[in-house]
Image (cartoon, rainbow, N blue to C red; front, top):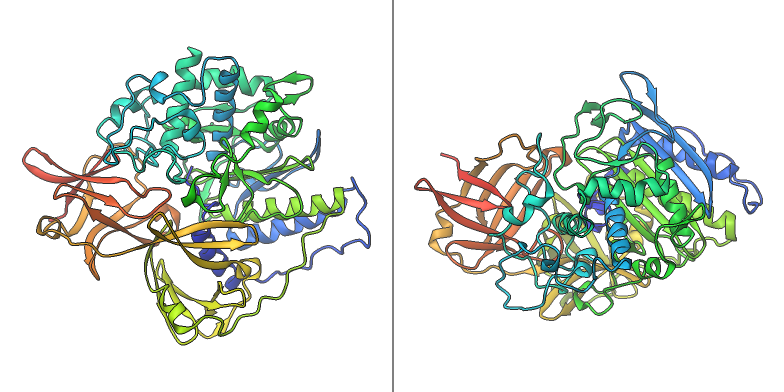
Amino acid sequence: MRQISATVTRYVLGIMISVALSGCATSPPVRPATLVPGEYGYLKQQISWLIRQEMAKSNVQGLSIALVDDQQVVWSEGFGFADRAAQTPASGDTVYRVGSVSKLFTCLAAMQLVEQGRLELDRPLTTYIPDFSLRSRSGTTAPITLRSIMTHHSGIPSDYQKGMWTQQPQPISTLPTLIRDEYAAFPPNTVFSYSNLGMSLLGLAVQNASGQEFSRYLQQAVLLPLGMQHAAFSAAIATQAPAAKAYRNGEEKTEPPLRDIPAGGLNASVNNMSRFIRMILAEGELDGQRLIKAETLQEMLRSQNRDVALDQGFRIGLGWMLDGLGGINIKNAGTVAHHSGATIYHRAQLVVLPKVKLGVVVLSNSSSAQQVVNSISTEALRLALEIKTGRKQPEQEPVVSGEFLTPDELEAYQGSYATMAGLGRLSPRSGYLKAELMDRSFRLVPRQDKKLQLQYRLLGLFPLDLGELGRYGISRATVNGHELLKVADGEQELVIGEKVMPVPVSEAWRQRTGSYRISNAGADTVLVSDIELRLENGFLLVEYTLPEFGGGRTSSVIRPVSDHEAVFTGLWRGMGETIRVINENGTEQLSFSGYRLEKAP
């Protein structure tokens, strides 16, 4: 659900920490002099060794992997435990929550209905959900369509958090009523802005067009034809084998039920998911049964956002992320189509290389495993690509850093940036930029191509080799009046921040600064705590802690648009959304994503 894997900013911090703590206790297997096409024995040894190293380093309890070469599953294996207390080992049949990988199945079901003429990609969403509406302050008349939802360009807010993770979730049919007072985050087709809520509404469109409850329809139209035994869309994961237990910091946890089933409610094993991969690699067919036309699948894997200026080099298909940066980076393979997944405790990554007909899926039951599933997926496919085709990853040219930017050019970067990881700051120093983000600081040093290179010093003294991450180039761009910070690796690039400036803050908002608590949480699993509204350096900030996701403090800038409304500034997920001031029983509260926030005494 939470799209951790796609964001370079969080990946940066994870890499820095892991590099600082890394150190392998055993040696990897000896690489043979020649890799024989179709012979995956060395790959299994090498990746198994890597999996065990990464699991130990990141305190991952259980993990399963399946590697597919065209229509053959060449490797399926589990590592660690599905249930540590019962000493049940993980296997290829262990069932995990796959999180946002579920969206690929929801989009597939929608495209099946498009083929049948029961849905149309470019018709307004209201055609299929007549009671759907969102407020807008942009003045645009452009409709929200199914295509814009599948590409995360609808402008629908990222989530409706109230009731999302709760003991007795409401059906998705209640969503239009729940969100009728919410604002769109962006006008449609303005910028990529990841939305679980949008995908849940797509699931509701599928439900309405099919005439069947969403989970039941997906079972009949997608999962059963794929032969995915033990796989199901449901609000919760089963409590008995072959379902995996969930873990955080090595302690067993209970994954709460989820309302937004179309966005993240699939339970499946890697053996199940390998059948889905085989269907993708066979252009929509599996074991002689066609689930979707080849031309429809090709459209799903085609970049849909080349004309969206604010996306820069980032590409997305219909549900599929295309090419990789920030964890999924595979060269010489053609299109790299992938999707990650994260519930509160489970982590997942699925990657396919359609041109060379290779695919991999890695699932885990530990909240610390996102970087692990990303790196294992990438390394397995890089090695499989070399075994199958002889294509190696390109040799990395030496990165030369030095005084390649003038003081004035460094000065142009100075300022505050709204990023996916919170408010960051860049300030020029002698020959480099000091970057501050999530209570950490690191250096950005100029290099020969005029971009900036990340440099991290352990204890502020010792430079660390950041490997591939250290080769990413950071630069500025001004697009449609937005000052962007972006990161690139060759032809791939990604916007990671937008420069933000202080704006006048009215007395009404100044009086609202202080600590807040959620007053209507009910039976929800609330993911934020220690909420504070404060002024700092001219910015009005919402600061909060994510206790289930590392416990770090995150600061986001909000811009008042009136004495009763303010908007999160920046681009991408969670930004552009609105905080409203409401009065209930004579008491002023803040309203965001369905939650009521009351000021602490």
